[in-house]
Length: 346
Ligand SMILES: Cc1ncc(COP(=O)(O)O)c(C=O)c1O
Image (cartoon, rainbow, N blue to C red; front, side, top):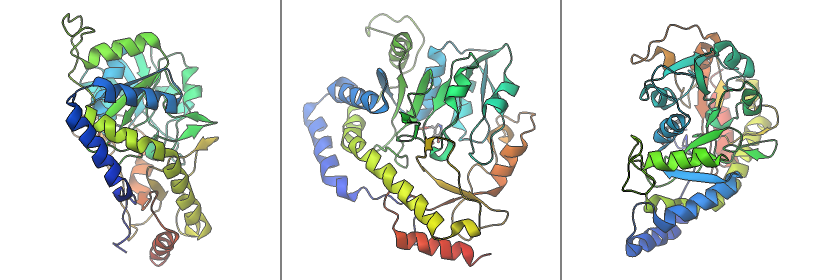
């Protein structure tokens, strides 16, 4: 059973093309930003369906910089889920802002309009819905609340809602290209997407030490750039993303067809959503012999935060979720093995 990997994706078929891309950059000699990064930014913006993509060093910086570009600073409140990776909250905290945690829908693992609305105050400067596990939060509904919405799309590259890609739904969106993500690079990488010209300009300034022209410094920013080697790798892999997502959806369909739903609660795509299945996360009231629980200690209860807030659906999801093997290279036979393993434990 241990032979079925949790992240079932094999990059070996791309090794030659990745190596050729790396060699191209090595010989070119421009390693920070430059034409390779510009080309990826253009290609990813076109893929997502927005006017701007700005490459940064990782998905955490992408969130911090996007929030800062929206004017989030000390004392401001940012509404977000607690059932997420710690970085979502960290991005607000390093700006001196206060994460205000809202609950989720345990069936989608994402925030809802109602849970966000309950957490809004006059001090709310931004909302950060997380597209958790590749499912999409209801961003269109959230935008009606009149506060800027930053999609945390770290886990959702390739997912879409009624045909609109994750990354094109919010005021801005942030991505991580960490190697396990649906669109991976060969180390750390991230990006911000937006249709807002002014916001894009602010982000470009902030990722480069608060400077537009590299000699006059108008803001206190970050040194957070996507490097050319990562951009070159991403340009090789981006054309594969839609095919990979199709195969993730086929694996999810196989889990259903082979009867996994008789033993555990299956993940549910939100209405109208083409799920990205970054992870295939079921719920069970018992320990499963395979897979791994995510975010067992949700962010609001982490020692660095310890927020005094009651989030019953978050607690339930944290206690009962199990990620089972998923990925574009998961075979039907492996799915069958997982289902047998889970059913044998009932
Ligand atoms: C939901 C979420 N947000 C933010 C991040 C941060 O991305 P990175 O690891 O590239 O900084 C991650 C990555 O693990 C994530 O899963």
